[in-house]
Length: 183
Image 1 (cartoon, rainbow, N blue to C red):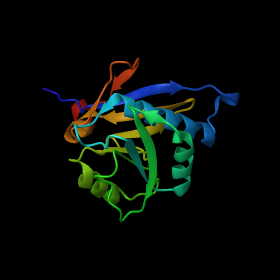
Image 2: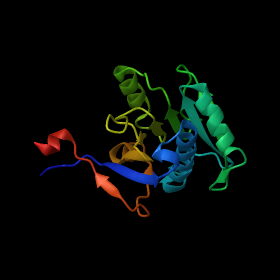
Image 3: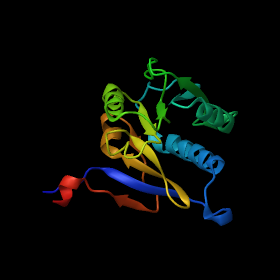
């Protein structure tokens, strides 16, 4: 029996702006909207989130932390304030963070694997801008298409982290098979 990897490609937002091109500012705004969507549609195990706040930790370019801090200032989701915190490579993301957003585009594959392995069994959602991050074992990664910001979700990774993601409200879900499944 062929087992498909539980990786879903979710086209969540289609944007049409001047010339049908996405500017960095628009991309950042859309990613912030998707992060809010992710928080609302993900369930964490009981007791793994503080009652008053939800922490998104960023590993990578500091300007991304500033953009998200502005986007999430005075925002509450699930009756919790959102805190955006920049991390350096030596700081631990768990247990203080609920989402670890890796914005480093230049991370070596072995560093990526180490990071994923380090946090795989914790209730920590691993999100990245890196191509194929979800396919390589991360929870989710953003994908920039011509006119849209999309999200790839690895359900197997979320399950290992004891997180559940609600897919019910999504219109377009495409199952992406693993290369082994295509043989």
